[in-house]
Amino acid sequence: MKIDKTAGEADVTTRNSGGWREKAPTLRECTITFKMLFLAGNANVSAIRGAYLNGSQVRLAALTDEKSSDGTMPDVGSEGVLGDFPITRLTMEVYTHLEQGEKSATINCLPGLGK
Image (cartoon, rainbow, N blue to C red):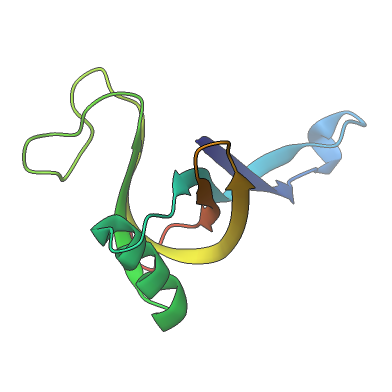
């Protein structure tokens, strides 16, 4: 799993900047990328695929530890992102193992509107 948080930049240089360009952060963005096994009939797989195909959102918890018991926030000591996300990329990869062929997917998602 990879959580990438970035912020845009605005040039706030003034004549009082002493010849140095000054910048300030603007809108922030967070992208989560993760891989999962694509197992036929799995509810999580169905939710991810459905969110991608329908343009809807799915609740994801990309955390270093547990989420709270009500599922609304990271638990004490846990870091990461928890919220409703549209799935913006769904890449299927098929791996052939000695025992069986397995499918996995790489998923990219961004926080949804109002989250």
